[in-house]
Length: 272
Image (tube, rainbow, N blue to C red; front, side, top):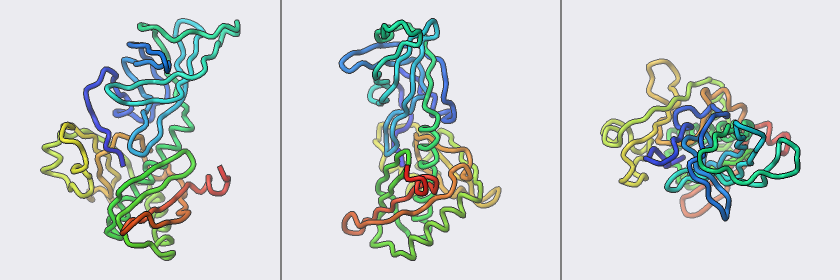
């Protein structure tokens, strides 16, 4: 569950408005070295944060053959795109130097990696809501990868029967094909109108004044959302896009804290 929300930075964070885009145009505003990295005026690259790994991909100069690999993305005072080994699409054997400020580039995000993260992140939202609703177990942490994920919750111990029930309910929610949507809300309004236990606004720094709220629809039109939480990550548009989920195990992490591990069925069967 991500606490990274909206803030004023040099880079316009386009993924907050549309996390389905994997190609975009931008301009280099700053170039840094040691390690080589650039700041863009706008980006759809998602930076590491709150349990979700960063996007990877490439920046391609729009006026020629120069290409730079994006190997890491970090959000601090702004969004930094770390550049890896460069390539020369022209084939003349001379790798391009770092892009200078003013260079217009085409950002190309690894779509498969982004899709996997979005599916796992949305599954984590479902799992967090399910554990809170049916076990009164609040999420205390999470980490997702391209082929698996884990979630920590405040709970004594999940039995094998509990894990079977959790897996069954998760897949029922996936099969329901519930819509996933997001919107922004100022903090004061959110604290006055939303369930803070579910949205976890209490965990956010006081300096954050505008929140991005992600909702998963209820069972029927007009019902309260099944899940509503403050989150800046990427998600699918409909729970059916997640696919079958397998609960792969559990472990005790401390007094009254359990870890639940899960994966998409295709990753369990394929051993990715």
